[in-house]
Image (cartoon, rainbow over all chains, first blue to last red; front, side, top):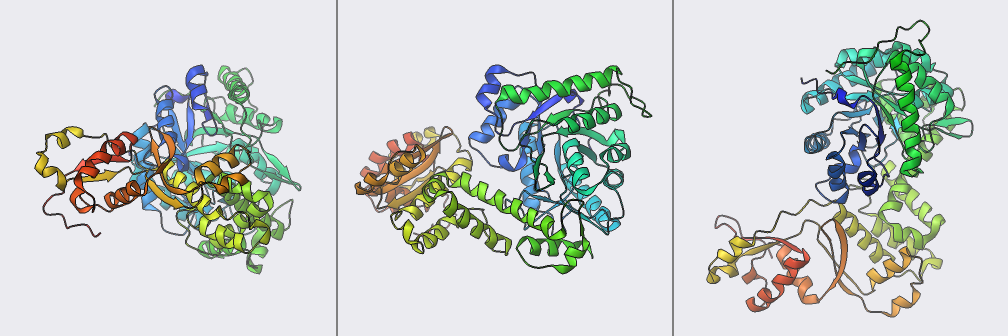
Amino acid sequence: MSDYIHWSLAGTGLSLRGCNVDEILSERPDVRWFEALVDAHIVDGGERLHNLERIREHYPVTLHGLGLALGSTSPLDTGYLVRIRALADRIDASWISDHICFTSLGNCFSHEVLPLPYTEEALDHIASRIMQVQDFLGRRILLENPARYLGYNHSTLSEGEFMAEMAERADCYLLLDVNNSYVTQHNLGADALDTIDCLPPQRVREIHLAGYDERDGCMLGGHNNPVREPVWALYEAAQKRFTGTPTLIEWEHDIPDLKDALRDVRRAKRVMHRAQNGLRKPAGVPAQGVRSPG
Amino acid sequence: MRLAELQSALDAALAGKECPELHRLVVSLKQSPEDCLALYRQLLRRAHVNALQQLFPACARLLGQDHFQLLAEFYSAQIAAGAGFDPFGAQFPGLMESYRSSHAELEPLVFLADLATLEWHLQEARSARDDPALDLESWASLPRRQQHRMQAVVSYSLGLQYSRWPLAEIRDAVITDRPWQELLAGKGGWLCIHRHLDRLCIEPISETQARMLNGIRQGLSFDSLGYDLNLVQQLLPLMIARGWICRLRMPSDQEPAPES
């Protein structure tokens, strides 16, 4: 299988969702790459797809999905896979990512990622499905930890253990969403630093940052705010362990102007540079230095 | 509980069914199992409502937040209960009409179902496949006596709709927050909804044009459309210029004749 990861993406990216493409193309912001939502672009034509192609002429693009439902026990949607592959080929996507979850009721616009129990059975199941998908797509994919608002008392593995073992068994890569880790820690008590420590650095190929939301004491993934301070602190720790890993600022709702969204992009870049320069050595974790391409 | 059973139970819980076994499995530091499941249920419904709001913006404005929310949640609950609504939103116009007719205060919105159908056509046009570039050379090089056998192919994005209401004007007024009530006195007619150079278009067309486009969409050749060939040739340039027709082809002799 091709190890098709563009390490030229080292730097900070921004989700394309809600962005004004004309503004991006006229201003050419200092963003290393843009991430497009798979489900919004698996169409055969139209303005949205053409806008993505316009962006792709000037920036690398990664694809992020919600619909693969890799943890689901219902059959893989091969039609969906065909369309993802066609889109990835069409825009020469640098990589494709999705979530460690199952989605409810087919892919019927639920887009609410439902948490898997972290058990051996779930591990076997998802690893086998990831391998099938990777074989079909002909490339390794990245799997992201979801924000979880419930856990299961029969889980036998921590999130970090589950992700690490899944990546080894399926030979896939990982996308660490630091905001989601923080949200899960708040809601379920799962230590986010433990998750970071458990993940094998060679498997973590992207980091997501976003803002959370709170409702009735529960924290939600949100993606509707700038990145909050506790998440920045966790990101510092993540960059110390996974130094130089490409990082994306993700927005989903209440999307701000490009100028405001770029503030977090710049801050993430500063954190990344500090880690790369070894200005703040992590306690007990050796800095890895900048990753080399390939 | 096995993984498949857990997922079925969670699906059922999201559809509002009681699942005591699932409640025994679910843990959280912040909420009871019931509240955790209710939260996912709310998020799922909210995602559906937002998606429907994006698909039917004018209808959402007309109905107002409360009615639209209720309607969208009802639609969402039907999906959660296993209704095979695919693609998402396609059955919403029909549901909207039955909802309207059962609420007296919505009586003035007699055109609601038609408006919803128009918004659905726009959604289909928005994401339709790109049309191929038109090849007029093969048409021009064909001997005139052969041209009646040609078939035209309509744009992938093309939708046709008849309404007794001036839907395009009403939609425009609703979207731009202008009064729409007086527009109801206006005339309706046929609309051609399509995408041309990435721009969504709603164009009024004559009944002749609508019937001709419908016949073309069914795969009829020019001589089977039931119109004088001169009229067809007269209307064709406009249809091509507007992007309603994207291709001309000669049906192969082996092809079965399309059903009219």
